[in-house]
Image 1 (cartoon, rainbow over the protein chains, first blue to last red):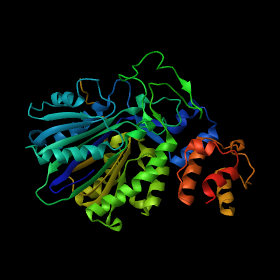
Image 2 (tube, chains in turn purple, cyan; image 1 turned 135 degrees about the horizontal axis):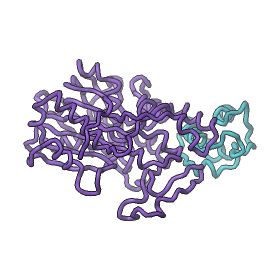
Image 3 (spheres, rainbow over the protein chains, first blue to last red; image 1 turned 120 degrees about the vertical axis):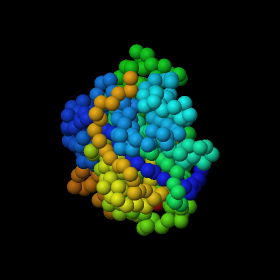
Image 4 (cartoon, rainbow over the protein chains, first blue to last red; image 1 turned 120 degrees about the horizontal axis):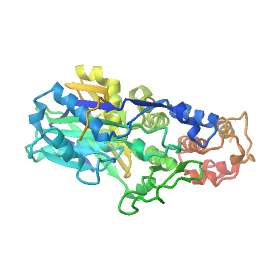
Length: 360
Length: 70
């Protein structure tokens, strides 16, 4: 699906990471691989340190911290917010929606529209699209796009395939109407035939959690996980990204009428450095225009990875000036989405550590 | 074929390989090596190969014949 909007802009972004750091070497003995094998993985994927939530902290707690920072910075935001989109795969409860809990926590009124969206690595693009679309036919002035995930709890600590990559984080992005023309162009694609390339088999209605689903089993590669854990078919995901994302980027740039050379930054979802470098090579863009330092610093936090890339790498620049950016998220669904837009100047752009603002 | 053998030696972390060498006998043979081979085949020969398809090949030469020989 292609879409474009003329008067929508990103106004501010806050990303929050948990304070707990885990080093790759701390977990190396948990894996059923030799030390040299795991160190080769570390070198290839550029793994170093990741951030994970402490016991009792939910992804929504990180999101509340980010929202509090934005409201403290701009008190009038409270009256301008007309919708809260909460995009996550690790909701607080099966029901009610977490967006309603956040609405209540911050005292937003009943006219504020709240909806939860189950999306993963493309979650920032999906949230941005839904926010822009929502403002087309409503009186909503500003939308909170909240991306939040704490997948570290859903991954087996003995799964070398996923565990060393995953990080937890949340971001709140304020999407607003713009008085100036600022084109925002999207191309969003999905293919459910490969939906099970990234999944958690048990815990839903199809296969409820039980003692049996919690039992660890070894796979062919030597990783231990249960049916309650996230499973990723690494080779399928690699082939999907290499095959599907470059043509999507080319088509989105063509739709926006923007030459590849005119793009300042390609801000992509952050699976690992190996895949991002391959992607940059396939696209024929210099690696310097494709930041790939998130997994080594914080871990892959699913839909939060793009706002995190923005806050970590571009905050000082974006507070002062604008940059022409191409965004792309790809993963669970399978979903692959891209957007071309002018980002900045932003009124707020910060990555901070969790201070303990809790959703009770 | 010469280029292929040189790149495979790099990926398999040895000085040189021959077509008859058995893939799973290499000391570094694991899922990461398989992924590196998938990425190399994609880049050099524009073929999409799954981990299962790589593992179904017994030797370095068989992998070339099936996916890199065209």
